[in-house]
Image (cartoon, rainbow, N blue to C red; front, side):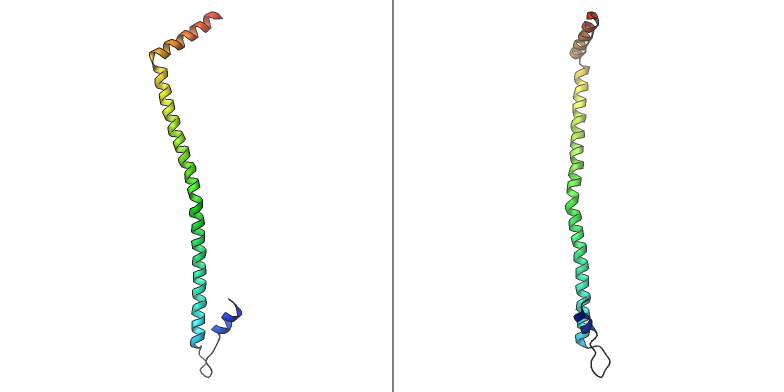
Length: 101
């Protein structure tokens, strides 16, 4: 609160001992300004928080996509390795390797 705010709020109507309309109005304006300032601080904090969160969510989504792709590749690899042609080819490679030694 500034010196002018204090002076305006302490103004007394001469002879009545009551605060004048101007003083009451000044006090109401100062209180309204303080409420607006507090609200703006909260809005600023929320905006900064919302601006930071999408990046964190994007990283989580990227990990999810990578996991789905890796699971799909693993399923394809298992299907290929279970086929008869691949089993025969791998057995022949192992047999040749053991016969050379």
